Length: 80
Image 1 (tube, one colour):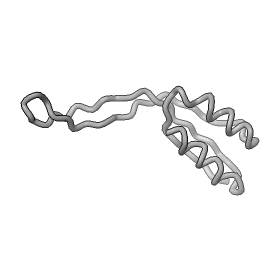
Image 2 (cartoon, rainbow, N blue to C red):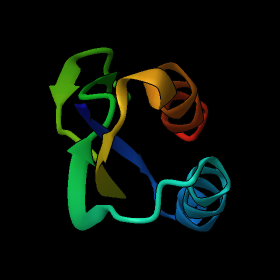
Image 3 (cartoon, rainbow, N blue to C red):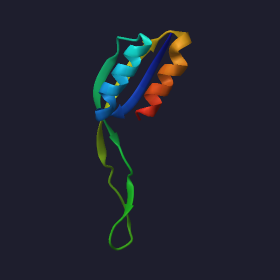
Image 4 (cartoon, one colour):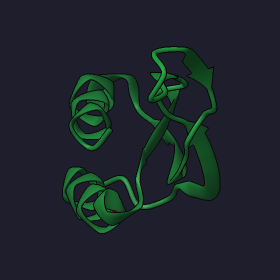
């Protein structure tokens, strides 16, 4: 058994749940999180500002059997 964890865009959650259910994986934990985006941007004078943008995302945690882990990782990776 392996525990997988991924931070994905909120609009991808339904697709991830459907694809994992198709593999036979029904249980998962989903939490709302905020992830910092690109922090360093130049302002109009050319100086670099360090102001992170926080993007709404969900964190998905799922425990999968070893033989399904590669497929589950690919599903989660495609949704990030």
